[in-house]
Image (cartoon, rainbow, N blue to C red; front, side, top):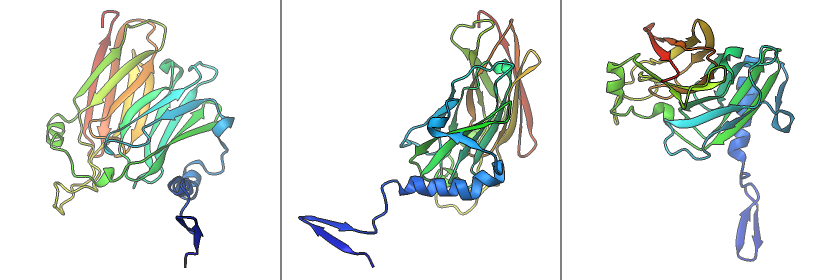
Amino acid sequence: MATLFFSFSTLVFADVAPADYRQQLSDKVWEENIRVPNFQDREIIEGAAQDILEIKAPYTAEDATIVPVSIHTKIPQSPDKYIQKIHIYIDKNPVPLVGIFEFTPHSGSADLAMRIRVDDFSYVRAIAEMNDGKLYMTKSFVRAKGACSAPPPASMEESQKLLGKMKMNTVGELVLGKPNLMQLMIRHPNITGLAPLKVGSHVRPPAHFVKEITVDYNGEMVMKAQLTFSVSMDPAFRFFFVPEKEGVMTVKGVDTQENHFSSTYKVTLSS
């Protein structure tokens, strides 16, 4: 039974939860259910001890199904030292893993941006795995709820019709030999399998989402990603690549129903 204290006109319960109890709960889920199965006893450097990457996400999401998140790295991708992978997790999602993104020195920068689904108040975490095996983590707390079980929007039918179609374009003026930003969007409903077909329905379609993409430029890998339904409908990504000359970017993808799709984009100084 709670103990009641009286102080002037304020009533305070001794067992009131701390203001950051949701953050504490998310950390508990990370430590007990995610960290060890995925990283065993490897040291993960975080907080003030790391200066490799940071994550930006809204503290309160306007729409839990399309939460913008971006990863900003603080080192260039050089042959001697580079970020080999970035692991992204949402602690309290039904499937915590958002994706594992692989990079090479041809990326120039391992910065990354996308839209994700957040199912409950949770930390979103990014873990950078260096080419020497060291791990660095950053996190951001997001207040959002119900994304993975939300009824699909009307636009989902259009995404199904255009499944696998892609749009690509470079951002800004192309600069050879330097990291250039690329935008990629893939039309796909990215069905979670947890949402009804419509409001009031008990029929849930099976999960169906993009599970892997590979990106190369003139035959050299830029990025490869293993993905889950925690990525929003019509997956959209921003990433960097270093063009030494004009050429062709090729993106290949596959979804959980083994549909394969691909697209190319000519990168020129006039694009």
